[in-house]
Amino acid sequence: NTIATFKSLGASNRIIFQMFFIEVMMVAGLGVLIGLSLGYLLPIAVKAAFGSELPVSIELGVGLKSTAVAIAYGFLTATIFILWPLGRTRNINATALFRDELGTARNWPGGGIVIATITLLFALAGFAIGTAQSQRIAIFFIAGAVILFAVFFGLGILTGRLARSIPAPRSAELKLALANLAGPGTLTRSVVISLGLGLTLLVAVALVDNSITRDLATTTPEKAPSYYMLDIDRNNADAFKRTVLGAVPKPKLALAPMLRGRIVRIDGKSPDDIKVPPRSAWVLNGDRGLTYSETVPRGSKVVAGEWWEKDYQGEPLVSLEAEIAKDFGLEVGDSLTVNVLGRDITARVSNLRELEWESLAINFVMTFSPNTLKDAPHNFLATVTMTDRDDIKGEARLVQKLISQFPGVTAIRVKDALDEFSRVFARIMTAIRAAGLITLLSGALVLAGALATAQRRRIYQSVVLKTLGATRGRVIAVHFWEYLLLASVTAGFAVLLGALGAYIVATRIIDVGFSFAVGPVMTALALSSVLVILFGAIGTWRVLNVRPMPYLRSE
Image (cartoon, rainbow, N blue to C red; front, side, top):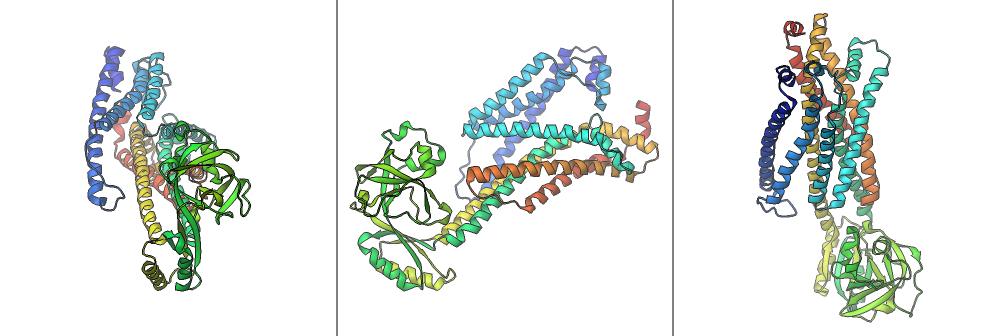
């Protein structure tokens, strides 16, 4: 309306563009300042509230690089979103701009604006990738965001077309609500996009959390040992075994030799010359646990090659975990060199294994044939599984006996380690959920802006309806049905996309079983309904309080 007035008074397109561009940049500057202030205050609040419970210490300080990145994001994003609507006003006259309040004007900005917008979008993506700690994650995030945006944008268009094609219902209120979804200046696309992205993230995070928690609950407690016993002298291994078997009734005991070694060659190449994915890079960081065994260890399954024969006395052989071998580029028949106690030992890869890491049993990435390491100085590692896991007195009796007879042995209670892991995991998931809620809040603010933009159209509709005799209740019913339909469609697709994303993350990335939960789905439905209806109710209340006469005269 203001731009149309300026055009009517003779203002040039250049002056209008510059004036409103400067105005938006000033508002963006205020927003950036508020964002920076909240960003600086948030770590202080987190440290004050949860500092003692966090697994890491928070060192407070002002990072110039982070500040510069945040400022650049703010102004770059504001520039992208102001160019297109301002560019549209350059090519149409004032009359069309006045009418555009009702969504009747359809035009594209000039070619220069289109090119500039696309260029800035790519610049924003490149900036995000260039400043990210993990470029790979940033690329996947941007690709996912683009796909989700396109899906919800298309869903918004499809929803409008479906609303237009549905046979008119008998209810006048529902009929008007469908007309609002399909008509010009509709809120459909804005609501679907703004809420859909946040809800999808929330559903995905909640379902991944549920899948991991369920997997841990169903596999770990049943299979996990009660204790890990470290540094058992090889000369005391038999005595240790007798002590454990005599201390508690029917315990399950597993013993395995353990050495330390560092990988120095992978099929003749230095590890520094091989690009290893992050998921397996930890194997190359310093010394790793090594063992030897005549038989396939419990919890392992040979998936390639063959296990060596009993009493094997040939060349040194090694069995590798299959996924790590793949990341190292190793196959059966290749060589691996490890440094053990200052001596390089080269072994041929005899077979590849899949390991049940979730069982928490004794598992080694590298298991050698006995003739390779048996004569080297080493200790033993043991796991003790109590038949009666609730026998606390039996556990205490066992640990006291072992400490008194074998003072060099270290006992680690698995339950304590699992409890600590669960606490850290719960905090991490809480932080991720908080990030999801921030995304949803951002979508809610976009939703509020969209509703405010469409406010004038709704005022005209309300004025016409009230002039024709519609009561306040019927106007409220029209808006209620419209918002409820929008929320239901958005939440439904968010659940589908969030579940699909959670399935991919759980099964392909984290490698756990996917578990669908009704709770996150109902939460998404409730959140979408509450947000849409809440913001819609605020706008509806303003519409209901408008006096018809001034608006009828202005038309």
